[in-house]
Length: 105
Image 1 (spheres, rainbow, N blue to C red):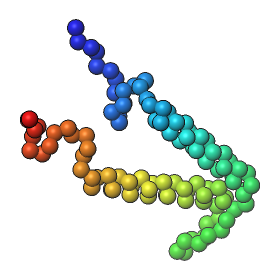
Image 2 (image 1 turned 60 degrees about the vertical axis):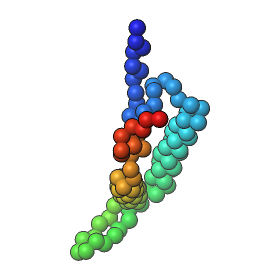
Image 3 (image 1 turned 180 degrees about the vertical axis):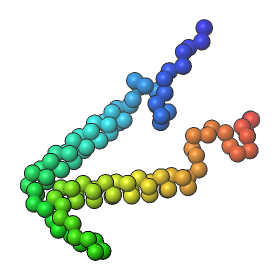
Image 4 (image 1 turned 30 degrees about the horizontal axis):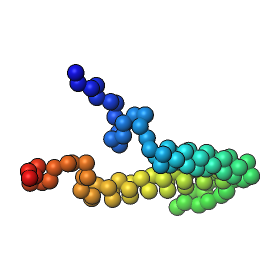
């Protein structure tokens, strides 16, 4: 009898089989995200006053936290776009055969 194929995650890892390093990195990412949210909450509580800024002919007054969130979002999107552009230039490491076909010994 053949073995059933295990479910696979998008990065090729078998579900339920993560190494210790992968689990540790996942925990570090979760802690870092929670810390970033906590810092954002503290910043929003401490900086409720509006900021006035000018863009072309418009003068806008927005709370500091909104300006920080928009700036962070723009930075995250820019980083994501740069990473995607850098990855698209790399050759795929997922293919197991060479361009000339499988080698036989």
